[in-house]
Length: 153
Image (cartoon, rainbow, N blue to C red):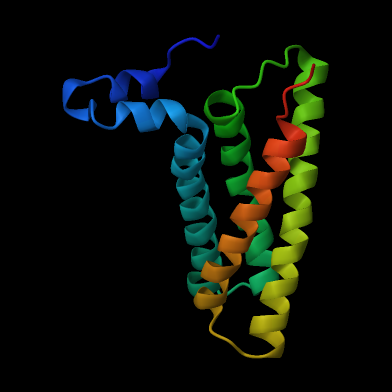
């Protein structure tokens, strides 16, 4: 049994009573969507800053954005979404390593999409970034759910 957290307290206010059953039933999905939005925004705006303001190449800008987004995603997913019970320094770093490896694989997928669609075919930078993030978010959820934060018996 997990202990109550801030999100449980938020949905327990009276005017959110209608939402509480859906939240409790699909808690993991709601929180993944919330923190996924945060991760997306971090990634998108850091990428945008480095490509549009600093005028850095799309692949380097994407790698920098990936670092910020991945760190945010790891700590929020570990703490609130998948509620990891792994304890100890070794378990923490194994989980961090597997999380980063999974995210690195989707970074490679995204880098390929950006390179091919922007550099080779000339599509609009931010449009490609937006749609590539949708694919990456789905892949990241599957990797996190099925591999990184799976419940071990």
